[in-house]
Length: 203
Image 1 (cartoon, rainbow, N blue to C red):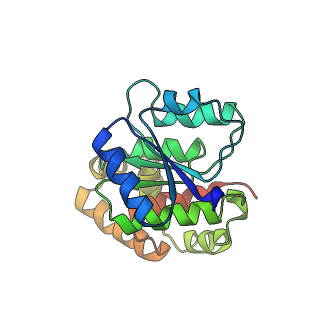
Image 2 (cartoon, rainbow, N blue to C red; image 1 turned 45 degrees about the horizontal axis):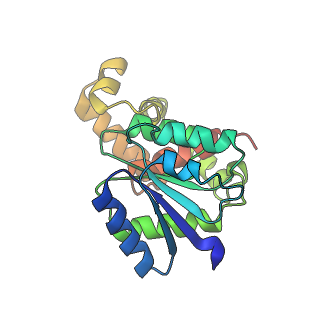
Image 3 (cartoon, helix red, strand yellow; image 1 turned 60 degrees about the vertical axis):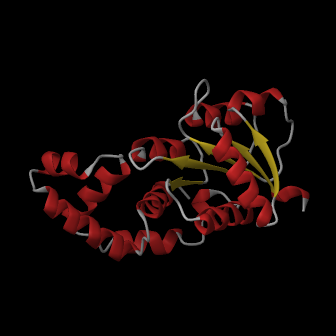
């Protein structure tokens, strides 16, 4: 299907090629770009499918890329790939409108599922997310301390910083973090952040 095109934007040629091969084997039509500048230079009036981009790129990085897409009125789901230490950037990307973020190293199927999910929900505003009411209900089960730890995680803070800010030990933060993940039904940190942002969006 023409609207299932995946635009891969990454400055690393090896990553670009391997993602292109992976997605082609998953039956997506794939277009590769060496930079956000190269993608934007094609002057697309309408972008079908979705975009997969790295958050850290020379020139226009993933965050600025999202802003430029928005300023040009290009409404297309964007999945941002981040390094393990880039949670703060990932959160910022989602606040700028990214559909999802996936942490490296990731399982191939996680990316494929993320793309299919983004394509499926592309016309659906975040506030209308089918799980938003359930997410808010789960948030209501968190203790005050667990909510404080969640707020720190969504701000992109590491465990040690959250521990320092709250006057508790890093080990205690880890326990609260595990409890938050369990109560929220989150399988990963990116999943948890995504749910928190969905809950914060206004219906």
